[in-house]
Length: 619
Image (tube, rainbow, N blue to C red; front, side):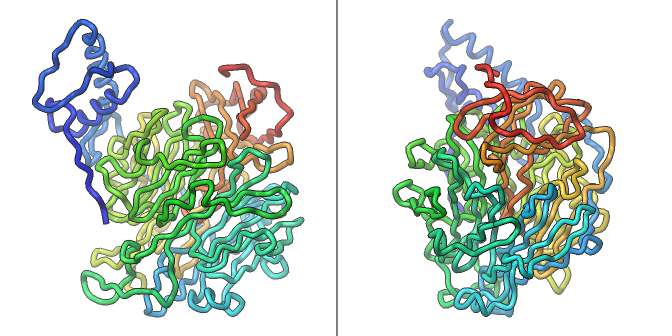
């Protein structure tokens, strides 16, 4: 259920939404005098001390409002980009991937059947290319009570280096049999191998990777939460050199407490989460450095706010040197956990303006993206939601976020669809982030674009980013060579064939997964960076800044974004016409900074901590 906030107009100039946002943006800026307040039906008594501020305001309004539009997001000041060619080709069959997430749906409408499953891009064998790990479902009743009797299991596919894959699950130890939701990747024991954490409806599983073979060490590591686990992320929140673990939970659910709901057009249907009485608390595990974790949810403050978490992103949003955590919640306000540096967290989502949308609505948050899309040096956010609710694109202004969804042209494109997996990625290497969203309904619709066999199915959405900050939808829908209509959930993003163009893997409910090979080519350059700490581990939470031509870039090392996915840990940068990146500075998770020499485009470079020079202040 959504809650409306009461909002007063700031200035009686016009009812136009863009003016309201422009004035609000200016009032919240650091340049306006604290004595100035814009109120309806009142005049401003100006003296000489504020005349300059008012003049500056209208100058800012012209710049800030020049690209504005109404809530529909229909106005643009630049010619539309070319959006009439496909960007991807589905090569799943040719690549050897044969996987469908099996919901086990049999007419009982158990809610987990409409939520999963997940996928990870992981170089489990350290051979330099991305392998694929798929999270499986099965029968939720059997899996929760006796996972060993569940007739399905997760699948591990080895990348053979030529965009083909071999199923190596048997004998790998990776075939967890829980009713799977999501997966997180990270080298928690600093041995150079990437480990797996799997969330299930029931006991979660930690698989330790030892030279490509996996061992279930959940019990000894003390990370076997038995709730309904959803999104998860490895991060070093206490800056002690090893990866801790955040696990979101959805509801306190069991088959025995399932309830019955009905569709508006008649017939039984999956229930919305707000029909259930008990949202669940998330869990934070601190890595003790000896192979075990301690549950610090209560003392850290994380466990104090039960929610319906589905999406997670990690980043230093306030740039204080400590990793913060953003959680997208389904039908409840989102959370921005600010890391206070002493082992505790404070939710600042409401005060920073990213807990709800611009109208004060709590949305059905699912997939999350976290990138610096406006190239101003801090991390922005985007959250995708239910049909009838557009994405929420939050631009980071340093001390708060501004909802720029309509201004970016994203509102109209996304509202008609239910979106889950999300990639804020530069697919065409022009230097501007594009937007891919995997779609699929959670309730049947009379307007469904799906077949009779799957009334929840939809085509995915692909939008091209442009230099003016606006997005344009690619046709055909989803940017694929063939029309593909499925109930999609997780989406993972990375360069599967090491050609410098980001590919996409989409997991579908009761339908084959898609392996979308990026088929774009052209004059745009690219570069990829693998950032390693002193242990040779992907330095999750570190970030790089660099200059690409005339453009400044700021990119975090992250795998946990999208929905129920673990993504390529390498940093991918589209460079446009730039042939190098220069002024490269890495900020490590402990706040120390190193500078590195210029790097050439068209290559994957490895940057290891300790091999650069101390960065100069202000660089």
